[in-house]
Structures are given as structure tokens and as C-alpha cells.
View (cartoon, rainbow, N blue to C red):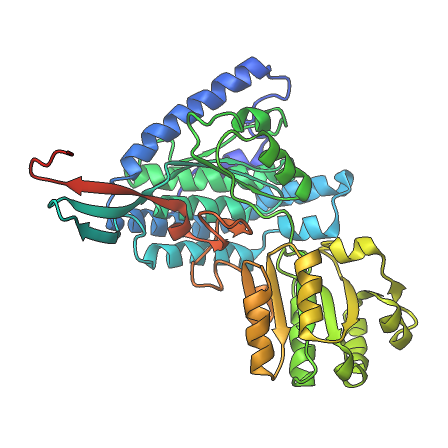
Length: 441
């Protein structure tokens, strides 16, 4: 079964608003989108769990049925990167292939199968005066997502927002416009066929950057904004948004190799953390090595990193082991490379490693490789990051890997949500107070 007319993918998008649109017209269109989203959110808030799950499965089927058309749209975006000078990391994030498209559809099915996060009784108490107070999970309302490069965010965001009973307004980057538009049309069409209100999933229909500051002032319509992209975008959103923001600035992820550990296992973990997908925010950027294990650990490390063409930047002591390594600067310890580059430093203890991570880290994902349980406990208790690992790759910080099916993003904030954010993290709560005539004295 074909789920929508793919002819729009084979021509320049007729829906794309001209770049010469005035700010006034842009503001009017965005306001209308906001109004539609608010109306849709009210219907979604009382939608049954079964109805939401059926719609998510229909969305997954639509994506699978239109794999070829999605790849055609993505190819247009990839062609544009040839003249735009996009980095290899950004191109990797942008690329959609059969595997990634299948993963998006499967993510929707996993989300559909999860327990509905809306309507959960979080607590219930009866006061001495007879009042019964129930704390109930509810949707947030309308979620705004501003993101760069990764078109899979379009699907993840729409699916998770729907599961949590929220409407969503998406604003993707210009480099992925055709891909995002194809996916958003699929999702919206599937939602409407399932009887969901128009406005459940909306994509800002142009790439003019002037849309972003307008969106960030739409707190009358948007209850939460989530930026996913480079540090400059996130700083912009945080400085201008008039609604709450959930974000992480960057992923300067660390692994500490302790004095006692399985060297072969440690090499495998480090290699996976750095090389499996270096463009991801949960990829390893800085490696800390205990001096006591350096002689045994560094030679196989160098062999593994060189086989993957990883550029090493180390402190002076590490550079004595590897004369080809570049001497690290202070800036390197702060840097999220998103590339096959790794900073390396030798330390004396788990305490020194923790001190370094808390000073230079981004509170994203950090880990310890150790056979000493007390050191693992110390690391877990004292590193202030959203996700901590012992003897495992940092690459597992992901909604899919955490059993969420997909994720709306990763938060390094401490209020409301932290770490990978799934449907549960896109709910709030309200209190229902039942009485039988009580008045306050």
C-alpha cells in the first residue's frame, strides 16, 4: 500500500515558502501553526493509549513503504552538501540509508509498545480532613524542536511527542530540508488517517533563520523548546527562549582506565566509544589512563587507534609513548571533536580522573574501566554527569539503547529531565483534589 503521493519529492517543494517572505508574514504563519498545535494538543491529551499506539504503528508502516522516496529526498540534501562545505561528521548525521530508515520505523514500533506515560497515578494521599489528593501524569502540551542535520530526529520527535500526548512543531536545518519535509508529510498524513487532529505534527515550511527567534518567543503556544545541534544553536535558544528549554551544549565524554582492569576489554571499549560513530554526541573525546597501567595499556591502544586512523593529542607524558601524537593544548580538554580525534592524559588515581572530568566534562556521558569495585563506586558517587558507565562503552547513551525506542534528545540539565529523554520525560503532572464539602478554616 502507498501512503502518500511521492511526486512532490521529484520536484522542488511547492510548499517551501520563498526566502523573501517578510517577517510579518512569517510571524503570522507561525502563529497559525501554534494555534493549530494547541488545539491538537487538547485532543491528544485525552486520546486513549490504544489509539496512540495504532497511529505510531501506521507511521512506521508508512516510512517503510516509502523508503525509496525518502532516500530520493535525502539524496537532494546530500547533493547540496557538495557545495556547502558541510563537515564529514555533519554529512554522516544527515545521511539516510536502508538501515537507518528501518531503524526509524522500528523505533516507532518500540515506542508504540511501551506503557502509556499519560494518566499514571504518581501518588495518592488522603488528608486528615478527608480530601483525597491524586498526582496524575499529563502531557506537557506543545513541544518545539529545533535541530540540525539529523532527519531521524523528525521521526523520533514526532513519535515520542505523540506517545506522550503532545503536539510538536519541528524546525529542522536547511541542510536536511528535503528529508525532513518528506518524513513530516508522511507522519502527518498517517496521523490524519488515524483520526488525529490536524496540527499534531508540523514542520516549519522554510529554512529562513528569521523563523528561529520568532519561535523562541511563542511561549503562548509552545510549552517546551528542545534544541538539538551545535553549541552555538543551543546558546542562542537558551538566551532568547521565553519558554523552558531542555538541552545539552556538547558531549565531551570521558573514559578513565583504572590501574587494574582487563586490558583487552578496555581496548575494545575505548575503540568502540571513539570509533563506532565518532560524529555522535556520546562518542569518546578524552581518555584518562592510570600511570600504573600505562606500560601495559598504551602499546595496544596505539595499535588500535592507528588502525582506525585516529589522531591522538596527548599530554607531555603520553607523547613520550607516542612521538607522533600532537601535544594537547588547554582547549583540547574542552573540545567535542565529533571526529576521529582523541585527547589522552595520564593520571595517578581515580580521584584525579574524577577531578579532571568534573572540570572539563560536559555532564553528558563518562565512564570508568576498572576491576576495583570501590573505585567504580567512588566514580559513580563523585562524577556529576547525566549518564555514568563502568566497563562499558559511552555509545550506549541513547534512547533506543535504553529501551525508549527513540529519544527526543539528551539532557544534561538537572530539572525535569536528565539523560536520554523518552516519552516519560515529556510529561508533567497535575493534582486532582476530591472533597465532599471541605472548607479551609
